[in-house]
Image (cartoon, rainbow, N blue to C red):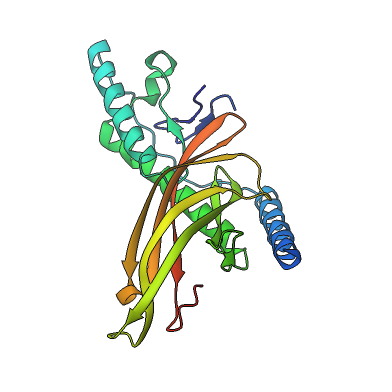
Length: 247
């Protein structure tokens, strides 16, 4: 069952509808950092509104039933576009019957409210990830020779980690006077053992940069926790030096 955040248009309210040994040491350290970040987020206090604050009030829009249907359709299009950015936010629009008279707004204003909510989410994401020592782990080598990195991601006020791996080949470049990437295969990702939930990769794309010395991997997928599925997209970079060492 799909669940989403519903946006109250004029009041700006949001309602949740439904509701090796070294590697182990690094993983535990990172897990502790994540716990500290989440603990800090939970203990933040809200800032009271000054008693002399001026609150602008507007008269409710006078809309016919047909106009409401048309506005509601535009609201859904705006929210779908927001969700398609795959930043890790999951929004929805209440049914027409759930709208109060004061909830209706011009589509432009509704879109502005959605953007404000997105901006707030991105600010929270930056703050949460900035408290980690690094949002990306070092490269490790898998049992089949694949190279792996762990990315730490933010969704619905939670930090979780996804392990991304690929099989990289290098070759000598006369221009770079050393090794450069020649190709990458078998790009996969899965939820890290230190995180809860389920991650399902839906798309991957590799972009070669820095004259062959860097691969930027775009990963898209769906993160599911407590039956709430959220789309998320992120990038991971792998680099090689002149000797072909990948980091």
